[in-house]
Image (cartoon, rainbow over all chains, first blue to last red; front, top):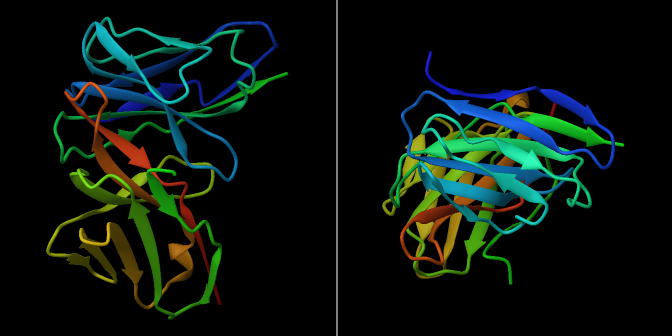
Length: 113
Length: 114
């Protein structure tokens, strides 16, 4: 089965702790993305990567970090510097190009107290 | 000004109604356009791509108006199961100029009632 997996589905952390969200795809897509969604809001781009070992900041990168050591994997770390980390985090992947369609993982709902 | 704008709604319609959503975009260099559907607490899923000539998939019709910089989605004969948030997506050339970045509208909520 081809697709994108994110784990865990729900994650709870105490304030001040770093937490890493997993995203894996077996679609052989070059591009991968991380979005954040708050209740009643659209998706905001955190980071994206078009190729292994390279990534760019999106609109709201502060307080987050990523790595892209393998084509299949694009983990996101929510650091203690992120002021409001509680949100729904979505990972997506696509082929490259102007007409590329994104495919999403099921998301991780992070709650920080 | 936001790059992709949608009326958040909600649009409250009875079963069987026809409903239309618009989405405006600010960057005339935008290349590709899509409609996604997102159910509550789930990930977005592609509903349809939007082509210059317009396209239809069953009860759903998507149109692109490049001159006025908007795309539209028309749903005919609404079903209860159409209740969801509909996200407009526009692929914009990134600041580095090397790749196209999907930009999402905040979504339009549709509620279909019996």
